[in-house]
Image 1 (cartoon, rainbow, N blue to C red):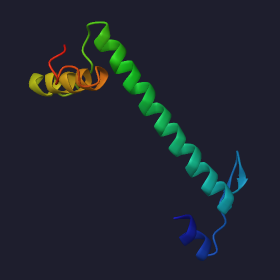
Image 2 (cartoon, rainbow, N blue to C red):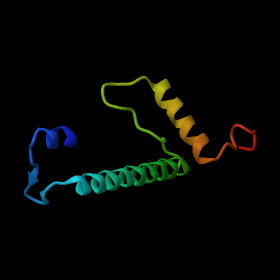
Image 3 (cartoon, rainbow, N blue to C red):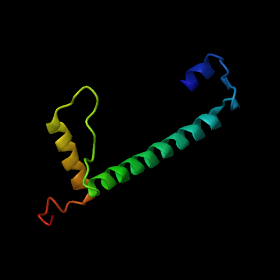
Length: 91
């Protein structure tokens, strides 16, 4: 999108950052990718903590998703947290 706007002669200016250039777009994309990766790690750690505390690894989504799906997700989180011990019969 940035390239298309730049080609059309449009300059992007924000209140917080001022003028936007190629360097800003590249750095912001990198920072966003790092944020998403960190968020995924924190989410996985939180799910593992819930499972270790004896709670469900995931909650049912709004609008009533079937319990079997929730149970399947819990088993997937358990397998991920325990590093395959359940699959090898060591659990």
